Length: 490
Image 1 (tube, rainbow, N blue to C red):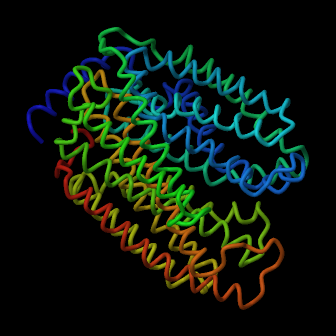
Image 2: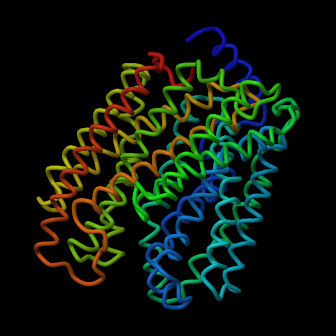
């Protein structure tokens, strides 16, 4: 890579050289606190999905209301990631994370006063805002804990495993809680977790230093335009499934997202202190890492969404058993660490990510064939997919942050998280649309007939085949723009 990035990395390393740890064990308090913060962000994405029927009965929610119970969190979370990262680089990363944890915990307690569906929707939107203030900063602060690049990669692996565990185990934890307590406890439990994370970060993570932050004024117009562009883009995907791709509200959302996106680019190019310096995308590492991350999240979201339906409806499994069926993802995420590090060290980032993209495409193609061949085949495909996820996600996350100036690291992780959120929305929309078009627009509440199960398997085969092509092209296209360095730092 060119001298500009090398110089940037040297500045970043010098800026982080003090207050660092020499092993993961020595940093267990701040690392555990950051993992807790990341876990509670991720688990909230899926935790309430298992409780929607109960919520509908208790609050009298309509189908649209239930959709917004889950969608409000994703929309505010995805729409505010860049803004939160920009604020953290100006106001202080630890400070913004502590505020986010405080608001997240207090809002979670507010569920005790919810009596109508609109109140729960508003609460979920608020939780998404608080989570957006936490997400880019938890990953950014991991880099502050270590100078050694191997330790950073392993710490990032821990963070990713914890985060994916929260996403995968959300339905399992939700089902376990609902078996013994009211659904409100699914949110109330966030408060003590946020409290523990607050104290761990407050006393374990070094305070922000003025030289590590930027003095640029906050780009409020850029923040508004980015929120509008990302929020409308996420909503248009949801609306396409709910209202149809040709409906007026979907078309208006798409046009609004495009207009806001164009306005954002125009403003950022003219601003003296842009929220996101678009010149960063001339760096192949930044551009390629973001693109590849979109591919990984398309794969992850497609498989998670599809298999939740597959296990619970086609197989008739309980929510807990369906959640446990995803455990190969968590186990492999840990076990694949030596392989991913060996690939990066032996062949360089570009080749390692291309190999990871190949694993992703192969696993999805395998699912296309194996959905009606039993769980062992599905589990094997999950293992292959996770090896690809582990390789591409970790390398690209580290490369993206290390390629940023030292006073823009939170923006680097915000870009990483935003790319993943875009991929998640696309993946969910693609598989949801295919199932609605190929199988049924209204999933039966009771047991499925043999003909419906056969139709569902047919829809899955086509869907995963299409997603395999999309993911392969996107992830490999992003990987091709990375450097071929054989280290874990650029």
